[in-house]
Image 1: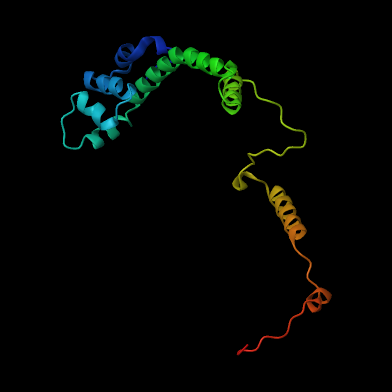
Image 2: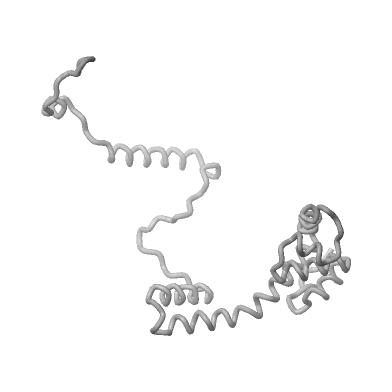
Length: 175
């Protein structure tokens, strides 16, 4: 079992493989898989010989040590790629030759990367509601009442006076 903090992105695949007790083939699978290759191709390139490389690669992707090594490698990659990606977003957001919608999306993505969340409009309901299974009986009754009143508000009143105003005649079978 690993102690928190033993693995970090600076260890890379080699350090992670050793710390996690991966075999050489498992470490090679992680390297190829994290470089963007398909899982079966990664298994083949790692030296696994079988007619069912999909099954082997699926088994590898359930192995806790392999998964941990993949997390370390992906974290390492993202920590080195993120500054460049942020720079590209910033350049696009400030380039007046770029369409305004793209510039706005780049600016919004940059703000999101910075962790800033814009305030919600006053009185706006949360888009994420508590699941029905987590609500109390009282909350469920309130929800039913709210939905029933909403449906009643949408209903079109039908009464006898409105029904006779229309120029209609009873339909016969042969009409």
